[in-house]
Image (tube, rainbow, N blue to C red; front, top):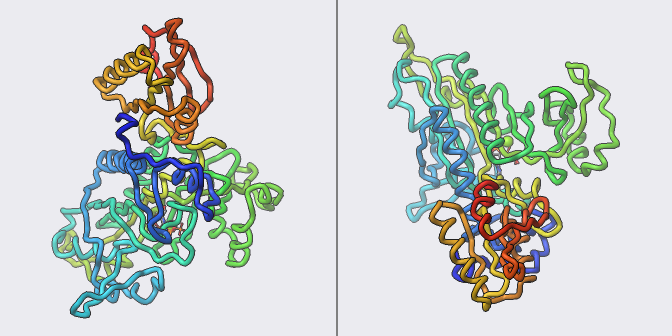
Length: 434
Ligand code: ATP
Ligand code: MG
């Protein structure tokens, strides 16, 4: 993409309610903009990042044998009446009526709809197991939409649902999804923990959450210093007041608090702050029983499906990457999430040698399918460099005055180091880096 043709409206000013770096930098970097409370538009850069995350999620799920579907976002209220959740979901569920006074819901999650889809289509134990997922819009009328993409009202979620003939098989799939989610978050370049969790309004018999570690996280988790153990404090402390009080505390304040308990492995436990980016649940037969979704077992007897459900906050992940990877100047994207890997900066567009080299390198990298931006704008070098830092391209090739000596520089966004490279070596060096 040529920067002179791109729609990337970067700004110096962050919105006044933006307290977190991801919110500030994603708006200032021209990735997203706010349409209303908890409602966001994705502009070209934001859309590229969102699609990249979606692709990683899809590739890993498809590898694990899941089937992608897409359900209608608007669901009839009658579905929710049957499971009893039209009462229990409360005000987060936004209801609408059509011109004939039929009532609908903007889907906050899709257990009921997915059970209806499978019911009477999957009738025998021979058709099981089955794992269906979608990556689709959700709407939750959150009491306090805030922190940009981290807590929106409309957001993109991957929601998956699996159907089984036995509890053992459901638990097998639950474990498979846990390892698949670990692959997804590892590929995205995130530092995360898997923790025991509370199942909340979704219900069921057991659940785990995936938390991206970040001081700004809304959740407080306890993790072991040596082994893999981790738990959301919601599962450890019984009183809601105690949980709320700990969640209110900053990461620094929590470090002064001692846990009196030790991990079963004998090591020390410590408090961390996390952003919940995934949640997997063992549901059992809660929804299949309520919605009378049965299959016939080996003896021809009808039985409700054993189910599990699996969520990932796809749009929340865009912000979670930045909460974990930023500095005072802007975004530092990981390799799998960067909107463009390489930015070619022509320092002075009026300098013919600089322009020619920039164009040549740009076309060569494009030819190799490298995600590359050519900064061919007339603006001053300093301005363009600040912009590149705000956006967070992993590498910027600076074509400037040193060209007279046959040199250009490669700027590494993460380490902030500049390395001089001979013109003849740029292409090779770039290909080695990315
Ligand atoms: P939270 O505790 O953060 O409100 P939740 O437990 O209600 O989330 P789930 O029902 O488990 O959320 O939804 C699956 C995933 O969807 C979550 O792990 C999270 O990553 C994402 N998610 C949930 N609510 C929001 C939201 N308001 N904005 C963006 N992503 C969200
Ligand atoms: Mg959750």
